[in-house]
Length: 268
Image (spheres, rainbow, N blue to C red):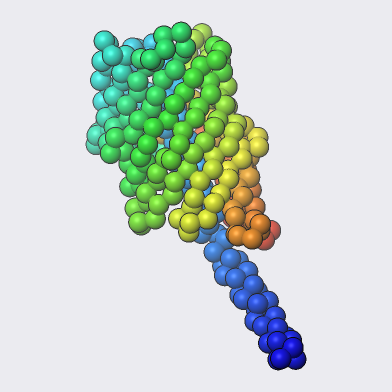
């Protein structure tokens, strides 16, 4: 009986190794798709950050045509709420091609008046035909320091794949004569990708947004680095890295180094 058991193990081991090798081969063929999905997740979060970093006072004076997408702006003074409604507007001419629809609601009326908190909520919101659902919370700890926290944002792409993610991000904002001119962001986003795998996005070098580019509907950061870790099960992970680099005039190279060493240039 022992001899039969030993023979069974000898026959089983090659099959196990073969399965592992086959899995690795499948992973290799999926790396570019996996990286593209993480790129979409990262930029679905970053795409509307500029709207969130504008204060209630900023919205009192802002011109809709100075905002990406040229939204219709409704101010509810008694509630301290801003509604940005994105409609088709042929007069909204920008260099960036991102197309939005739906609403973003910004609520600046904190429950605790001793803090400077506000909330961003998406309502039937889409950009480039992908939809984003959920709420993001912001808290100002200093004149130029803002922390952000969100749970279970849902990104639904136009080809029917979903991702869910949460995050904790710290922002440093730059102003010139009280006007917002730049945003630097660093932190971590975690979630589940369309394949059902756990992932972590670590912003290792701050994502820097130049407001002059945001106003032109250019949503990629002008600089920054991220490390994308994806779980494979059994304590095995793969890591992709992305580097954002400006080439001038708000044009960005987004270069991904895949886990197998190959490089990939991604665009929106």
